[in-house]
Length: 301
Image (cartoon, rainbow, N blue to C red; front, side):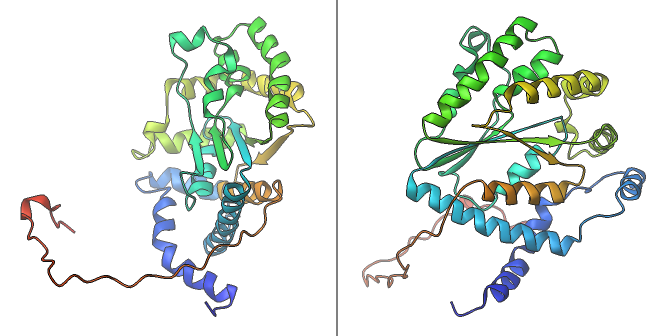
């Protein structure tokens, strides 16, 4: 390909714009009043074209990272934590959007079963850790114990204290085993969370994101703040420090997180064999069967 990188990015940007707009469908049926209030509160929105350009550039680098991890058999774990509606899922979606799900996978575990509640606390997370050549993104993680379980009373203070003793050693074990562990906390303000919850309430496409637990988190904002501060104090270790992502601006938060993640891993270019398309083999005796029209999806569009 003789195109300059800038020309290639421009062409790719044009070709993928529709896909990105679809993913960015934030306000599809949002009430006009809520949308107006949000715009007034966020007057310095990032230019959409600049956002897409940087998103595509970073996603190109993430493909290189993916290839390097697969080639070197590295093991990477990235933890995404933060308050409800802080934008963790949106960041994960943009990170994985163009990557190979055989190399990069997301883990979002449900509430523990009755059986899991009797196990060693970290046991249900261990099977999801990466093998060589894999990247695992945890959309919430073992830090549930320090957050929602503590605040909502699903864990006793003794269990939380034990967690704070155990988690640094657990993570040091992961690092000693060769896992690269990166931890992100997505931080939003009280006002921003309230606005995002209101947007979800008024948007049928997002109401599914609101659970009774999410609504209760609004009532217990200060308790969650105290729990977060304790968690950071006890688990910010040199082997696996926390990285706080200011997330009031979703677009900037995604780009900043992606850029930082790339800076945390010393990936490099991986040589690939040149791909050539082989010639089609034609068999003069082959006749394609005519299939029943009932087998086809109706052409409604």
